Length: 462
Image (cartoon, rainbow, N blue to C red; front, side, top):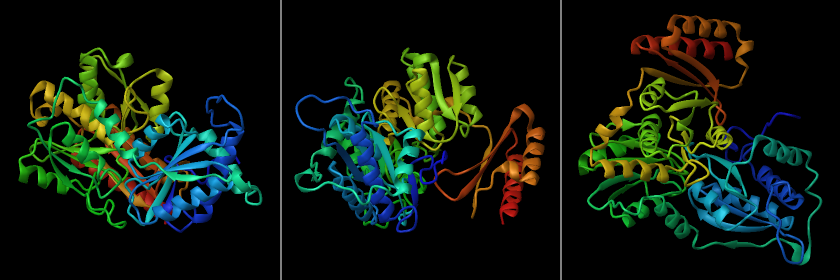
């Protein structure tokens, strides 16, 4: 087995209580991860002192009802094989990466399905350094889980792992977030709408901005286990748009369920996506000589307007496959410090090891404060080319090369667009969906092409 079957582009994800998001799989994952910790495979630094290293894992979640179930199953698997667990409760995904590093844990686990509806759940894993596990390590975990050789063995007596709660995790993370905002600036006099999607940042994000001096209008801060991402947050910015206009706010920030990405709303109520935020922040870092390699790392989904904007200031864009983990991998390989996705996963490696919606928002707001200009003007440095994205639900993911009719249509449209546009068709790594993206100079033609390809793909997969 050389291909991952449980892990997708962002961990394990699916409908809670349905394979692979079951208690049984979560239990096996805990046992397998404990085995990898004890073997030293996760790369934890050698410890001094006497005695065998027990291992310690940070375990957090978002606000989904099923989070309790999955969290406890993972903890049971870990402790049954002698690994201690630090439970942090609801905390943004990047917050768990931070706590993993700061507590010098062997790994960190996030129970979250990010932007998915509450019925779904997922599991993401960070190594001891706060970076997501590489594909090879996820494959090694899968082999242990699917072989099911760990269930009959365990530890006994005082060798059983302990689980304890870290009550100050949120406070530690808030202090770290505030440290990413320049000391010589303040948010006093600024009014900010923050939509937390009834998710993991429902207490963290508003508190950070208030402590930095902003007046905060908070939305999506009443989680009940079933309302995460329900018409709120980054996928549904309408509420933030309306609140910005109603309260005459300077900007709106809409986070997703685990707060590792954001969508921004300017003072006029217009949505600003990840590409525009990257353009603004990359230009600012380049102006200060702080953009390493004069390079931004993005994915194949980013609009061609991003390259056009940054080329004028001598910044180049490197593209990788979809998934913030692949953005981070390329950033680390190339020594770059800024990257992200059009969807709003933005990574500032000078401050964090993974996408962080609040860190991204603070970097954007710092530009606004320095320039003393409204966000609509600042974001004007980015002009998007017409782009149409069509998502279709699929029951199976057949390789495109096995669908000759669809591939022929893609080639035809690509030929019509020439150098002025692009066609990208791919399957989602986290959902049973196919995504068709077409980009070109004419919005009407782009929309027509995208729908034609989507219809052909749906027919071929029916």
